[in-house]
Image (cartoon, rainbow, N blue to C red; front, side, top):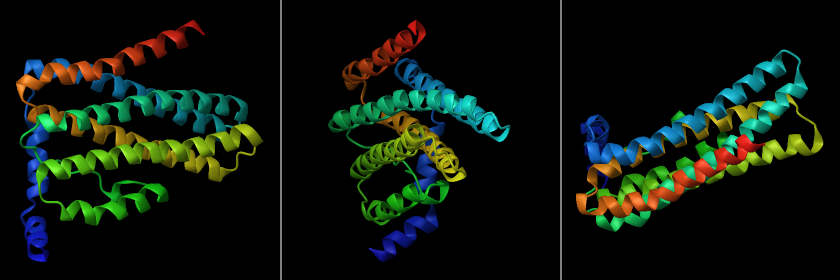
Length: 232
């Protein structure tokens, strides 16, 4: 087992396979499934990041009331992304039996994250991830880790936000926590899209229609949320 772990690390099998999967162009049929979902996730995470960055700038300029209103906008966008990403990962898990052989996906690593909550969470799973050799089982484990990571960050962000909302006690530590949680959530969202792309490449053509049907509620929910926001 030790020899196998060392050999895989030395030869960088995982890194090469992940790069190949990421660089392989999608067919038109796969693009029709991938692009609407990826565009929705990327748009919402961009809005979230911009709102929170503007909030931090307003706070640094001394405009604390405006700053916290922007935090509230960021929190609202976070809720939307926090619905889309787990739903996307759930759809992949549901359709996993349709895949015969899974392209290895690198998975998320602790060193790329800033929050201690995520670093501790991922370190617990890194060894288990390396001990699983079957690509399909390993991919399934990584999907589970991504989903848990998204939920963990949502809980931590919500805890910090509601504390500031409830008590109006917003010390620098609260702002720092909101910033690092947002950074980590953006990484998780991007990793979810990478996993989504790798999954599409491995899905047989006969399973595409069923998988696309499982993704439709994600986009419908996003459109419905946008309409409600526009009305208000």
